[in-house]
Structure formats: structure tokens, C-alpha cells
Length: 109
Length: 115
Image 1 (cartoon, rainbow over the protein chains, first blue to last red):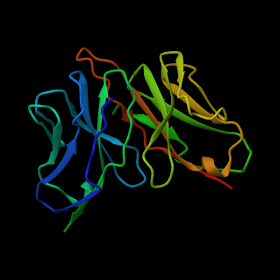
Image 2: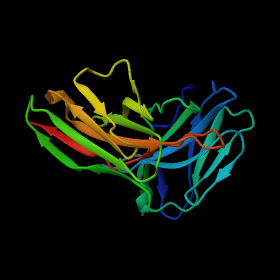
Image 3: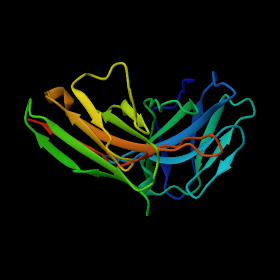
Image 4: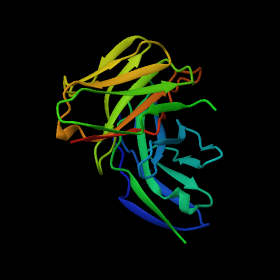
């Protein structure tokens, strides 16, 4: 599975969009991009995943560049409850999730 | 709501005293995973069951065992807990769907303290 690079931390104002970048320059054609988040002392929460196309669900949007070497998770209107560690994970179908250090997102009022 | 349930949420055990953590799911997923997450670290996979087939990670200590008596339940047994086994233990489940993805869904975790 391809490795990912994420910023260590980011701040976002409450009510604004939070844009979390992820680089995965060695991604292969069949590897998916997954995003999870982990709020303090809770289990990781699945957010969204994609292969090639941009994806949107009730939680977030995932924008994958055309060359698939990077992606951005967008939380359209961040709230204080979105403060968490956000993990970007690239993996093949059937392979295990390998968590990196992730990005600490702090939403501030 | 379909979910992954872990009991207990907090477990305290003594050094060397066997302990069992449990996980149940109402998602009817055929894959169940156990992760260990130590303080300020990312979750790390210990092993998983694909149906009844047990798959151990190469670096999982022998001290950790698992049982899956049926689709819904999976147990993590720590035979002789050491101080270094204090951690959050996370259970997750997944299935394979027609799109060829296997999204994992996590339980709330059990925080284990070893005295």
C-alpha cells in the first residue's frame, strides 16, 4: 500500500470549511484513498473513501487530483466537535488499514 | 442502529492476570479486527478473522490470542498482561461489497489498565 504524507496539525475557525490535504504520490491504480478521524478517547470513525472520482457524503467531500497523487478532505462547515485526528490511508481492497500519524485538526471558536 | 459494541469500556487488571475483552457486531460483517492503540500512537492491527479464518500479524506477541465463536462475537485474550500492554483496544468489522471496497467500522474501544 502506498504511503501518505499529511501535515502534523491544522487550525480552522468554527463555521468555516476545513481543507485537509494528503499526498500519496506512489499510489497505484487500484488503491483506494480512505479518510478516518478519531476524536479523543473514541474509536476511529469512517468518513469517506474514493478511487478516482470526487466523492461527497453527509460528513465531507473528498477531492482526488486527476493524477491521484494527492487528495483533500473538505469539511464544509467545521464545528468544535470536528476537532480530532484525521487519518488519510491508501490501501488495496482486502489489505489492512495502516494508520500513520494523521493531522490534528483544531476547530476554534 | 447497526453497530460495533465493545465491553467493557474500561478494564483494569493486575500484572500477569489473564483478561478477556469482547466485541460484538450487528452489522453481519464477515471480517472482524483487533487493533491496539497505545497512548499518543496510531492504532496498530493485531490480527483479524475472515469468517472463521484467523490471520495473525507477524509482530503480534504470542501473549495475545483471539476467538471468534460466531459471526457476531469476537474476543481478545491477553494471557499474561504486562505493564506494556496497557492501551486502548479497538475492534472493527468490515465486509466486501459489490464495489470491491471493504470499509472498516470501529467500536468505541476498551481502555485497559494494568496494575
